[in-house]
Image 1 (spheres, rainbow over the protein chains, first blue to last red):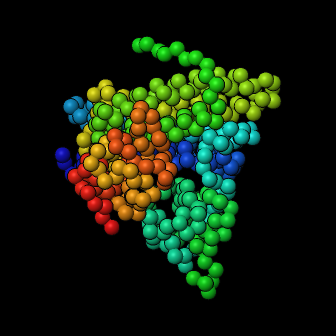
Image 2: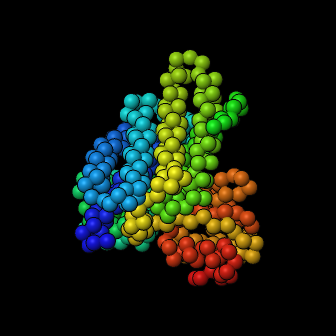
Image 3: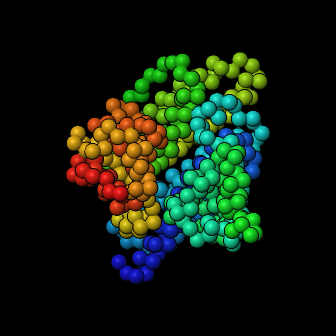
Amino acid sequence: MSKRSQRKFEEIVRRFVELKDTSELMIDLAYSALLLNSRELAEEVARLEERVDELHTEFELLVLSSGFKKEEAKGFLGLVRLGVAAEKIADAAAQIAEVVLRGVEPHQVLKLAIEEAEETITYVHVAENSPLVNKTLKEARIPEETGMWVLAIKRDEKCIRPKPDTTIQAGDILIASGYAEGEEDLKRLAAPPQGFA
Amino acid sequence: MAFEKIEYKPIPVRELLREMKNLSELMIDLAYSAALFNDRELAEDVLELEKRIDTLAYQLEMMTMIAARDAEDAEALVGVSKVASAADKISDAAADIAAIVIRNIGVHPIVSEIFERVEEHLVKVKVHEKSILVGKTLNELDLAPRMGIDIIAIYRKNDWIINPKAEEKIQFGDVLIARGTSEGLKELMALCEGKLDKLED
């Protein structure tokens, strides 16, 4: 395979990974939105839904314009179908978020079924002087230190699905959920008061 | 194709929904792995789970119908039925992904190759009688910090235990579904198969 088509492939897969990660992030956020009856999170899911539609179109256009050979067509069809499935998953997540956006008070049964130990959701800004900066999530040990779980990271208008090797940067906004007591701990960790860092 | 007739069973909606949510999320992981690594067995597992979810969806719908006695109940329960149908939709999407393998369409090998570099892996491995894991709790094994892997499900006696708790003991014959780094997963497989008899510190 030529260097050029290798690069093209890399680009296509990169788009797909973003599509896949975003759709899965949306599911996590949508269930949390439901559990906490959080309009803010539900709106985030709705925004991501639009982003997925854009990403999906870009991805399909890229696949279609990649000039594959006849014998490769099947492999590309598989990729196209993966994209369609990711988009369907995103739609399902948006449907969950819609329940919150329509102002339906989530039924007790939903809270029991979701089974997560979430009481609160918090948005924290990571300051330059935070010990979290340049650490991966695995190294940062946020759940161990604070009892809070990072659901998503907002960075330059993007919403990233956290993975163990995702590096935290100054300026990131962490969307985290957990017990109410953990909120202050996380805020201190993300933005240590001057003189205490 | 034969469809199973579904009879009403008084199972709490909470249980039905919890199972639908957990299974549908597991299915996504299994389905992507099946497609990207062209694993037919995993793909077939996904299709099995899809049938299970369909049954749960019918049962849940019957339960919510019975529970709604008036307009107020209906308003309170419509959210439940929407969420259940979303979980069903997620499982359908997972089945679509599995069908890429079942129908021999496949994904271009270079896609898997690139994907492998950026994403975490998933394996399905059976616990051998001689494995040192038998009888140990997940807590004791401390797999995440030690090997960088996470057991996301256990298949035991025709039943799925999803997101097993720390106190869960591994039994002989269990099938573990684990996710993590490829080195960690290799080690886990050797441990399960009894080829490695010591946990590294």
